[in-house]
Image 1 (cartoon, rainbow, N blue to C red):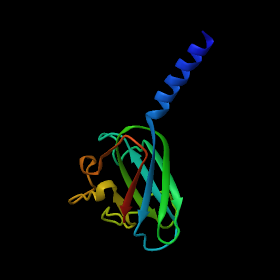
Image 2 (cartoon, helix red, strand yellow; image 1 turned 90 degrees about the vertical axis):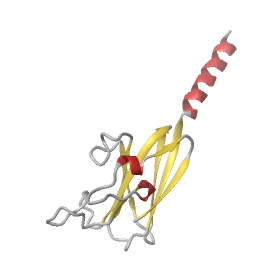
Image 3 (cartoon, rainbow, N blue to C red; image 1 turned 60 degrees about the vertical axis):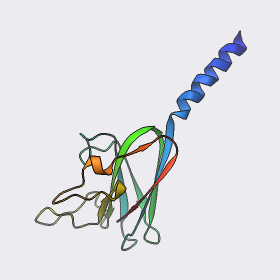
Amino acid sequence: MTKIITIITLFICSLMAAQNVKLTVAVSGLKNDTGIVKVGLYNSDGTFLKTTYKSLSSEIKNNKAVVTFDNLPAGEYAISTYHDENSNGKLDRNVMGVPSEDYAASNNAKGFMGPPSYKDAKFVIGKDSKIEITL
């Protein structure tokens, strides 16, 4: 009886583990190695560019940066990233409100007269994946 319970428990644990994925985000096209790259992961239209689901930062080497989000539930996400050249933890803007530091979104989504939309930046992951974003 103990063996059956152990087998069932291991089976349930393996099913739960199979639902979590790893997402690697490679950012390239940075103009220098100064500062850090900030990557925000969003899991809904309502929070896109407002409240990150998860966020990571990375040092820059050879004008590139890589971050990895571990243990994500499989599903729909979008990414925004920017080059925080002065390492102040925020996307700097000029007096008109236009970002003065380079930024990008997943799917190379671009906004017209504003930021990109979640609809254009979203993607679905069901297994370990890698996304490449060019600033």
